[in-house]
Image 1 (spheres, helix red, strand yellow):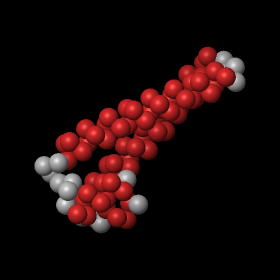
Image 2: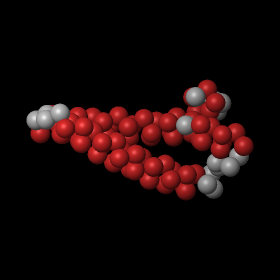
Image 3: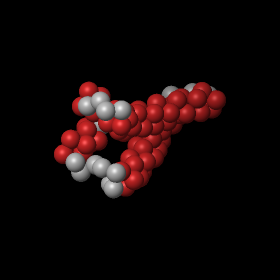
Length: 90
């Protein structure tokens, strides 16, 4: 994410602030996945889809969003750890 890359570039994201940053990203992941999963359930319910398919669609939506946010946060950090410029991850 651009927030990570900017923090690494200007020095506001370092070993001292990393734990609080990861906690903020975790909370953001939970909130966004909950909101989008709820919207997905409502949309699927409005179209009258059967319950097993509703669960599958909601779980898929949850995982796609969660994995995207996690990779967006950890990719620049892992690149910095390996000595690669984190700006290449954007």
